Length: 415
Figure (cartoon, rainbow, N blue to C red):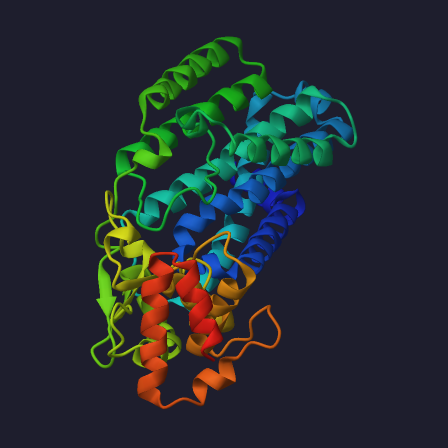
């Protein structure tokens, strides 16, 4: 067994599978560098591409055996016909796993210096994801042996990509757990319980065995493994919906600045706390001693179940999900400043043009960001003494919260 496995690992499809999965992992990480903060969890999203590549690799391996008439050769030996197929599948799956793990390991080394939270059961997500690659390789072998079509490998890979992608839109979240691919519906504060990971692992193992038995045309083994796979799928019908997954209280625990106006982020985002504070603390300081103005900044991820931003009017709530960069720092510092301006100021809809201009003046005064309206009298506001500027802004906050159109117009006319 060792010699055939060694031959398949170095001369079969396994090297190509390793290169393909390594390239696919690099590409997925490069496209979504903001997701590196949750590297282990994001791996489940990359399976959309990696499983498709593994199905294609498995189908190509099976087609390669058929093109070389390996089946006829095996019938003339005492060795069971399913044994070389199993060795070939194992080699392809191992190659794909090595390619994936090598890239993920490199990414983990890069983010280790800035990581501030490991996460509950992260290794479960990694294990189930790797099992999915082996299942995908088995599916590819089955398709390649059943369909004598030279181009079946890319067709099967594309069909897998489309099928798994469509599965992420299933309205029945319980059925969606049959797929190893998890999209971005999981919030930062949620985690998949270990027992659910274990159920997925058992399902994938049983499904892999069933696919290989079908490919080897072992009738009774197929019947047994298909029964096991069906049994393993039953718990998903009573499993939790995505929105009902437990909250990782440690992940959303606030981590706050110790100097200056308070700025708090979730522990999973703590590595960008200083960067967020650099942008937002000067804006908070500008509103100091203004009645009704926010006095602190908080990460939306720190909200637990049953809490809403509206319950804390003295806080500017910021969505930082797209801000972290892979190696630290903010991905969009300018947009964070604009987001602060929108989140910190009350907004009224359907205002007359004069009142609407007053809102833009207040936002430009606070953030120093150009607004989409020309000829705003912001410079006239800044020319006033600091106490008068803060008094004007305080009046604006009171009028905007009540959507007092007349008062908003008057504030604009005073400049």
